[in-house]
Image (cartoon, rainbow, N blue to C red; front, top):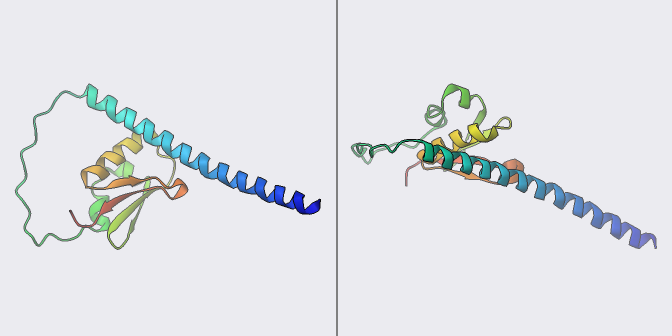
Length: 134
């Protein structure tokens, strides 16, 4: 009988662990959903702008981005909310605190403009900006 009780307790612990993971995923989805909604609203409320004049192409000897280059893309107030870490092929950007939907949307827009994206991974969620342009 005690063997069954131990199995049930272990199963209950596993269920608790799964609930923690699912709650993290649900929170990430809420943040992404809120950011998408705010981006959609901002796109709808902004007047149509003419297409920007294309920049002349950079020479083939374009160097890879570094942490300082990526930091310079962000206004000071947003930069202070983030940690930047150089990896082999990308710069990883992790929030130091809860960003809120407005800051998340601003950061996501800057990262996408640099060719990066958001990686949803629970507590390990982060933004990535590739060092080299594709």
